[in-house]
Image (cartoon, rainbow, N blue to C red; front, side, top):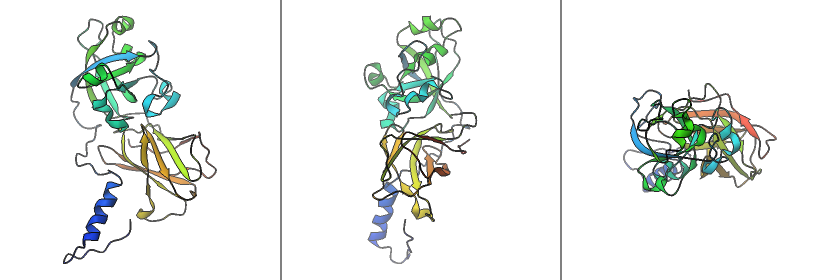
Length: 274
C-alpha cells in the first residue's frame, strides 16, 4: 500500500475511500483476538453422523481440497465434514474441534480431536444447529474400546463439541501447488496450520520485492485453496504470509516456493504458529 501523509486539518475524501478499499482486500483484523491454545474449553451440543468406510477417512479430500492427505499423518483419518452453520463457505477448513458422546451406552465420554476437511450440505447437517459428519475412524474413536461398530450402528448421535487449537507436533506448514498453476496464475492448498487452524488472509511476495506494500493479497478460491491472478509473470522464489482467523497472528514462510516450482508439487516450510 502506498505511503499516505495525513493532515489532521484536512483529511481528504480520497484518503478515506482508499483506506476502506484496501482494508476490504483482506479481512486480517479480528477484534476478538482469541487464542484457542489458552482459552477455557466451552462445550456445545451438536448432531453427529459418519460416512465412508467404517475405518476410513470419509471422502478423498472433500470440499476443502486436501486430497488424499486426509488419510495420512498428521490428519490420520481423524477428520470431519461439517454443516453449513460451521463451514462458513469454506473459511473454517482446517479448524480443529474436540467432539465426545455421552448419551449412548457405547460412548466412552472421552473427547477426540478432529479437523474440518469436508462440507455436509443436506439432511441433518443442514437442519441441526450444528452437525459433524465424521469419518468412520473419528466416529468410532468416540466409543468404548471394542464397541466401535455398536456406536456406528447408533444412527444420529447427540454429541458435545468445542473449538480447540490445532496441534501437529511441530510439523511445519505445507503448501501444495494446484495443478492448474502457471507462471501467471498461482493457486495452492495450505495445510497443517497449528493454533487457529483456519486463515483470514494469505499474501504472496515475489523475489526482490521489499517493503510492506509488496505483499499481494491472494483470494480464497474454494475450501483451503488460495489463488492469485498475477497479471504478469511471477518471479520466484515466492514468500507466503499467513494471518490466522481468530488470533490475528501473522506467519511468514520466506522463499518457500522455490525457483523452478512445479504444479502439483508440495513444499514444506520450517514455520508454524505454535
